[in-house]
Amino acid sequence: MRRIKAIFIKQAKDMLKNPIALLPFIIFPVIALIMTELVAKGNEDIPDNMFVTMMSAIFAGFGMLQSSAAIIAEDIEKKSLRFLIMAGVKPYEYLLGIGGFLLFAGVVVSASFGLIGGFTSTDFLKFFTVMIISISSSVTLGATIGLMSKNQQAAAGASVPIAVILGFTPMIANFNETVEKAAGILYTQQLNVIVNDFSANFIKAIVIMGINITVLAVLFIIAYRKKGLKA
Image 1 (cartoon, rainbow, N blue to C red):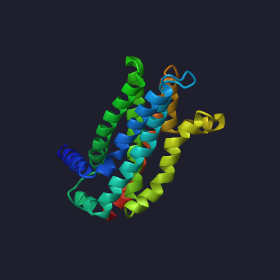
Image 2: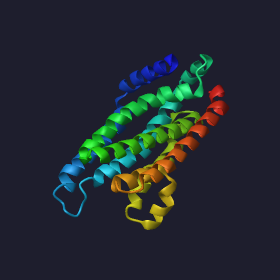
Image 3: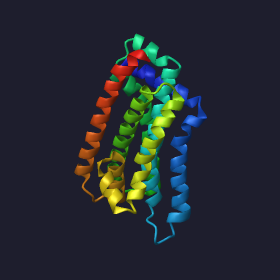
């Protein structure tokens, strides 16, 4: 527990020293707020929470994945991961430490999205649940990409295409049935399904998202054991 806490604090300090790294946690809810207040509200043809739906999926799938990949790649590039491994840090401790901070920040942003969308108590709980699972999945996937990259530039090159697919596919799925069906296996699409229709099959969405995060966690552990010791 002390190792996890130490990594959490280290990451918090690193992020606060880098304003650019904080942008994803600020810009997406701000855009959602502006577009909701100035465009959606007062326009009968646009649902009030449309931009909250879009921005939350992009934040969870694109922003969080990019942030996670960049953090891990930076630790590798600066040899921080080598020292952590030498100190006996285990894969789950490292992931929980780094991911714990990102998840904490994601919780704050998720709550902001919920307030902007004006969700009721039950709807807010559903939204918050699928957001946290989506954020956790993206953090895990981003960590795996970062771990397999030699530096931050390589991590960015590898993570951007995947982040674009995860973050923007749900938005396209809203207007294309073929994309909607194909994207059903993605955790971000399940987030999109629930937020667009809180009466949708919540259990089904949770099961699919659970499978996603389980597979991603296994991939991270494999990558850590294969690459981590050589970082």
